[in-house]
Amino acid sequence: MNMPALVVLFAASSVAAQQRSIEPKDVQVFNRSVSALSDGTRKGVRLNEQPGEGVAYLKGIEFSNGTIEFDVRGKDVQGQSFVGVAFHGLDSTTYDAIYLRPFNFRTEDPARHSHAVQYISHPTYTWQKLRAERPGAFEQPVSPAPDPNAWFHVRVVVASPKVSVFVGDAKQPSLVVTQLSDRTKGLVGLWVGNGSGGDFADLKIIPH
Image (cartoon, rainbow, N blue to C red; front, side, top):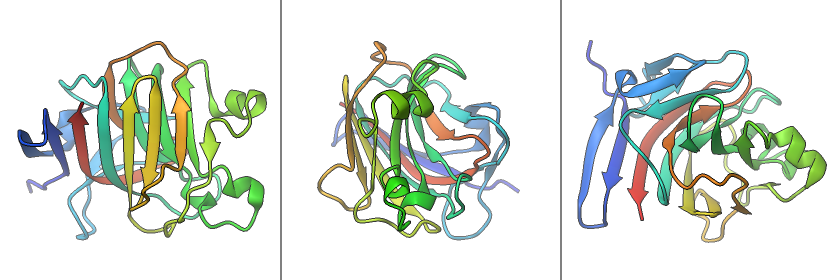
């Protein structure tokens, strides 16, 4: 059966936009498998759970500055849900990424609550290194906090070297960082963390 998958909007400007469905064959996948969602709620793709980080780059797309928007669904299980996007990528291990930890959205633990949205720049600047050396600079809470088991919307605005992350309908960013890599363009795609899967839908990539 030919199942529709991730709906992606590529736009050079607000008046010249094209929308098409992206299927698993349209992504280059590292350390994951990608399948079309079959839960009936919306068109999208699912990255499976397995050890290590995984990334699914969109084939034929080079991203520099612009906006990356997507809907994503993780789960409220501590240490098992890390979902986001990679950009300015070179390969399976070299990229910048923004990701969310849904299990920290509504926790009553203040330390965990402050670790809800994260920037990393692999392979050098892992979350462990950044948290140890510059605590609070590259991860923050998300407010208002979405339901950690439901779909939520994310908008990542890249104006290199500045990156701003908006969650839900928030007018103010949950996280603003200065990129730690010197790359200004590269691959773009879906990202999941160690042991995590994730569901993704309604991806929009709008170059600036």
